Image 1 (cartoon, rainbow, N blue to C red):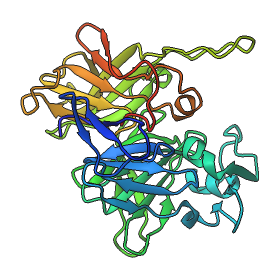
Image 2: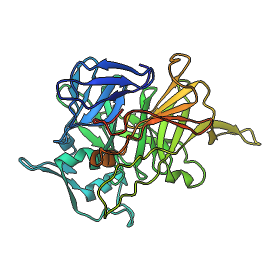
Image 3: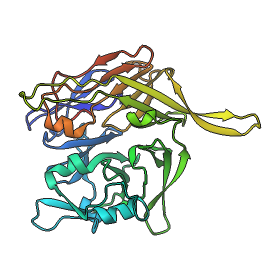
Length: 356
């Protein structure tokens, strides 16, 4: 598939899929529900959440669909009483899992319980869904305030979600070589392994320390695995959206201004010891990178000549802003690492569901 698909909001009777790579459009086998929020795309499948807080995956080309486990399977941390319009998050219990014990005093987990209307779960609780290659496992990244990831082994009976510790919070993740890899908000990369001994839990181990300095914490981070197995972190800087509180709402053209790519490389010290470190680069060879709502990808342009080598294809993944301000221009385009220019893609307004 030459690049992630983009869903366009059309009447409920029809949807088209537009492929960024070769600018080809196809009619979807099943119309996309414009009320659903896209939380990720993996291998041609879209992960979505609806107004009830339910999660599902769908292949818009073939029309296949499948339910992901209900978020209420995180009970008692996440509760959804019968007939209630809200989900209730036990912040104390959530913190116990995230920090594997009591959280630091400054982490803002003082509320005993947090109420989230079911329609807002897709915007303020969920952040991203990453699927395994066989779609038999899923990783749900929660919003930054909650931090901890959740994992599920999908099954015919629905399966269940299980939270996993993450002190720094997971910002992005990919599925590569049979396991999930994640990058935290602090820049630490971890590999996640499934305990097949009966607990069905996922545990992590650090595979790469954070980049030197703290400048990277000002950027959004995406984790990318290259076809030859190397890991990359893509840093994204976008301007703040400043809105007037006294004048009528005006569209804001919030276009990402800078991307930086760091590659994990092996270094030999004077004693011959091999150590890994992050090196910034503006040259990624003939590759093209895809980041945003979709699972981050690295694709060789030798196999897909319709793509632009040395470029980052990006989609808008600011769910809250995009949902609340559909009049804004979509923050999506093609960024050249060589000269820092951006070629805009899409329309002058938001499509919904968001491009993935």
